[in-house]
Image: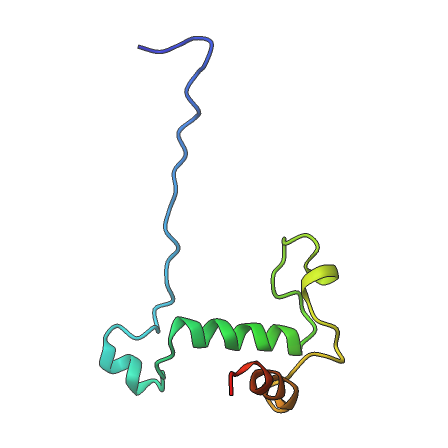
Length: 95
């Protein structure tokens, strides 16, 4: 039974995106293509480091990230120079 004060939204057709035809279809083809396994944590960290290194906003849509969360560039550690991070970690460890 339909309610005239609240009509049903119009039906929309959704189609799944079609993957490119040259993608590997089997695990063997994926390995042969040179894929290396990374955990989700490793991939997220690599994406974050790449975005920070490129000066991009790693979290678009999060209001205030640039002003309150992101460290200043002088205090930021890069993968190549982690001395400030390892020194902080050493001080945080109990003796």
